[in-house]
Image (cartoon, rainbow, N blue to C red; front, side, top):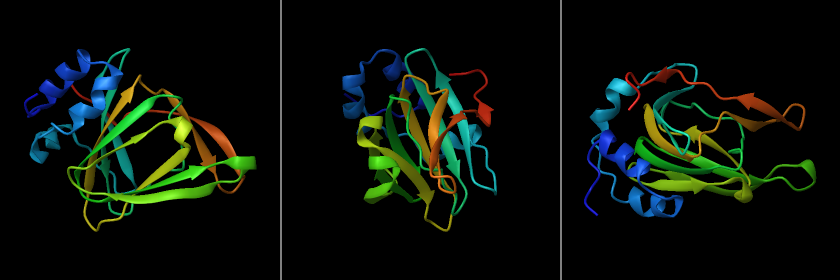
Amino acid sequence: MTSIKTIEELVDFLSHSTTQELPKMLRYIDIPKNTFDSYATWSEEGYTRNCLARTDDYELILICWSPEANTAVHNHSEQHCWMYQISGILKEQRYSKPHGQLNLTRASELKQGQFTYMHDRMGFHSLTNIGSARAMSLHIYVAPIDQCQIYDPKKGTLETKVMTYDKIAEPLI
């Protein structure tokens, strides 16, 4: 396989691939960071979710992170999720939830060009931009996620959150 140099090439690959082929594909992503600029939106209060492509089989989302932005601890509604770090540094924390309590099981840093994988059978996770600059990450979900469970630390419970986009690519790639 040759390098994937454009978002269109990535979408074409996603449209013709099986779930098993996706991990191999990630190592071939070589899309210049500035390619994502026209799809990016930013919020000083946190992060934004920008849909680049969506079918019944997958969802491709560009997440733009302000410094110190973080997600709640959440799951992925039984869907596979691969994340490719475009720029900046994110910290991923993974948790198990035996007997209703969250237990930190792993913490790692994701730097430009690295990727990670998450699925509910691995527990829950959260992401935080630990750098002093903005960051961007590309998320591939198999299949799309319309809602997820987030952990409310004040109540100690899981709550359903409906997922929304801050921007949808026009035309959707």
